[in-house]
Image (cartoon, rainbow, N blue to C red):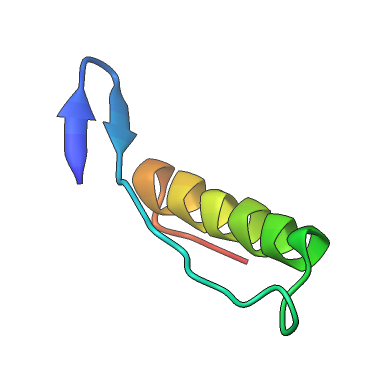
Amino acid sequence: MEHKKDKKTMPISIHAHHALLDGYHLALFIEHFQNLMDCTSTNGNHT
C-alpha cells in the first residue's frame, strides 16, 4: 500500500478469461473491493 498525501493507494492486477467472467461481474467485484478498502482505512468495519 502506498501513501500519497491524504490518500492510500494499492495497485492490483486482475487476469480473467472472458468466457468465464463478464466485465459486469468484474465491475461488481472491484466496487465491493473498493468499499472494503474504504471501510478498512477509515474505521476497520466492513460489510
